[in-house]
Image (cartoon, rainbow, N blue to C red; front, side, top):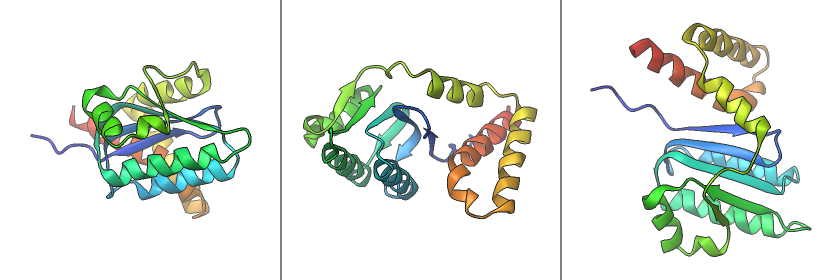
Length: 170
């Protein structure tokens, strides 16, 4: 039996709305980077953030608390921003509603039409292993060139490493 892939958060930070795809479990062990990214987006004035839970295998109270805090921060903007969560699945929907978070954020069934983010994620998902290795190597080189690039590309690098490992096992 193969080891499960580590959780990743894929982001489309330059789209409007900002879109984050959550893969794996979202919990206290892996959400600090996500929290920092979201805080940076809110500080930059991003008013619409969409979280795609289609591939999220579960979440804990720490992650749910980050969602609540994000929704509250977005509401303080003028005009108020919005946090939209979609494709929750039954269990994740239950977790959100059991804590009353449906009163703070918007629950949607599907992602809003966002061609930029969709194209970006599709390109990453459909990459052949050799192309994925080349793109991974290129991003790792950017980090070697300037360590400040690590924060900018950590999610892309993590996703590509997972893709390469997964494809190498097939």
